[in-house]
Image 1: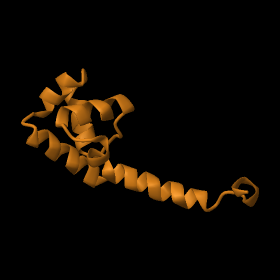
Image 2: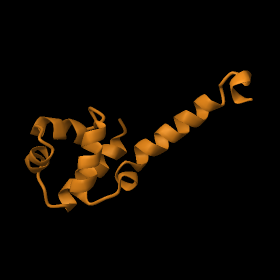
Image 3: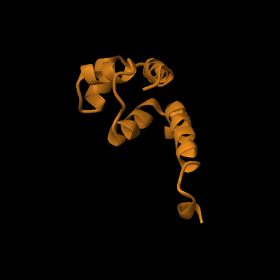
Length: 88
C-alpha cells in the first residue's frame, strides 16, 4: 500500500477530530486494524473504504485517489499487453 494513502487516511482522521480508537469503534473493528491501515500495512476492505469515507466526510475518490491512480496505471499497462484477438 502506498505511504501517501496511509498519510491521507491519518490526516483525515485527525482533521475529523478522532483518535484511532474512535475510528475503530465506528468501524466495529480494533484499534490495531486502524493502525495497520494508517501505517500502510494493509489495504482496507470495501466496507472499510465506504465507512472511512463516511466518517471523514470525504468522497471515496478524494480519500483513495492514490490507490485509484495506481490501479488505473496498472490496468492501462495490462490492457496494452492483451492478446491481439481480445482487442478486436
